[in-house]
Image (cartoon, one colour):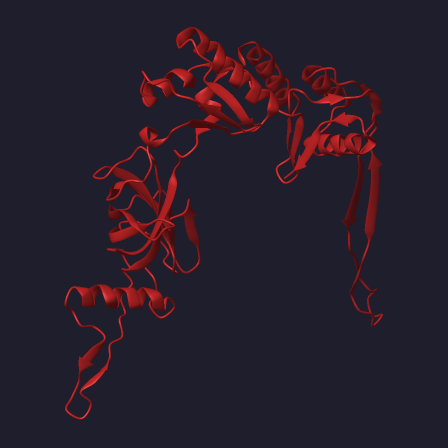
Length: 376
């Protein structure tokens, strides 16, 4: 843990001189976003690893509906004159009901292809070797935007017998590269926008101001005009010059670099023992000590054997040994002038991740940690 923290500090120190990033990496164009589409379909061609139709009735209903659309009647079968028809029971294990999901990018148009994700909906054990039957993908407005079909690529597998199973990854989910054909384009384009609006991915007053100044400084020399003004701390409105297209205009603005500012935060994940300390985190001068108390309980039962001819019984006598050990600890003074000194002070105590988490939470409770603590 100590080596990892020191490596992160050196990395942050080396990158501090080159902290400027491009505007297009920290801001998006309002109106140009991905749209989620979803569909329900069937995967066929499975080698006995599909849904159990008795446990997944929706799979049987979907299979019957698909065959009926192709002119095949599988719901009833003729038996005799007295009993002309009776329901047909399907027993195939080569079909699985799935949900198909994809993200429709704003730059994609009709006739282009995109990747889709296929996930099992029933009790299928694997989609390996399956083929997705033509499935319509709809957006939130109910319109069909793409149609997916093709062979599924599955990264995981599951092999087992009566006594043991071996599995790796998730065999009930896979992808179809270029498996969806776009049928409809998302409404809205850059040419229809009167104003171009930049939305910050991490809203911040200082970052918004720096972006605004960088754009106006560039526009003053390039277009002889001030083209940007702030709407709020996460939105910047751009007025596009008339003699330039929106694509070239956004390409030039997106390549401008600024140094984003972030609030002081400490992110703690107690499940994995991960602690992330922001660059601007400061700690007022405090004295910290941390000790660990270890209690070990060992059961050492003893068998009591009676003497010969004593008519006694052999019994097990419980014997418990309890050991308590508290490791010695030292007092360290933490004064977080910068991130490097803060990590050096924590390393002086020789803490494990769980100890660092406890120390940071205690410092925050004492009011000496000048940052937001986010516990995941």
